[in-house]
Image (cartoon, rainbow, N blue to C red; front, side):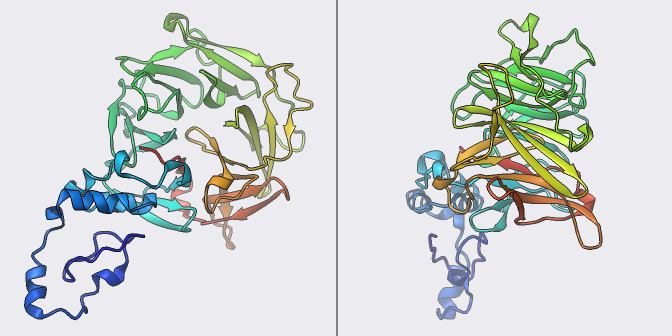
Length: 389
């Protein structure tokens, strides 16, 4: 952690810095202290601010540094971050708190929360993919791509039916290319629509099959969008010709788990180490069961596709966004061969809430980590995001 030594009379700009550096009891003559109190953080020479920014290897400290003032924010850029994104653990965005416009992020490594300031998302619904968010206004009319760390915004076409979206996936990060596609699930998981980076309107997929489809999840895998329907079938989205955009089944229905009713099961699509996985999460009587399968593209046979061990991989499941995987050994504080997910939780007095849990695929046990129970915000989603610029 970088230690700054500012004038003692100035309060700390971020709770990420060492509080001792801001102790007003420092033994400085009263006259000098009075003069120091007139200092302004924004007056720090830019070359010095850049030098400080480059010393920060923790994304949390880097973001807090950039939130101090406008001039510091201009130095908190991708070019000045030397920590390396591959070592930055995924963050968990927490639900909106009453009375504040800012969101909080949960840091797995430090096992604590920190405030993500500067985001104008109060009252908006959030969905995540590839480190970016879609923000949806209360009336569902306005959709915006937002980078939660550097605050870049890309306005998307107006929601053509004003149907609330449920999830989305990006074909590529807008941070890396201007040639990307946004695919959304909307209308209670019954509709699919997409737009390219410079489109002025959304294009519906399977427009003629109105109301006949329902989907669990979607993802982008090997240059194509895939969806998983409520029957457990894997479908590919053919969108080369926008006028004929449609889905088609490429792998038949995954066998049902007779131990659970259909309404007690949730399916996720996750890319992991070059393969596409289906994760089945089942709930019954406050117990949670997991099964992982590799999508059998070659022979369409699910019989031998179950994955018993994830090895060094770790899965992060998003209800309202794209799920993803990482190589655990590259990240401090992340357990390998595990699944991180949001679950319904119950306190001792049976009050329902939600929080973050970890399922170990080896011993088939769940572990509660950083539990955030709040029954009034129980339905709101926790979002895993991959740090990026």
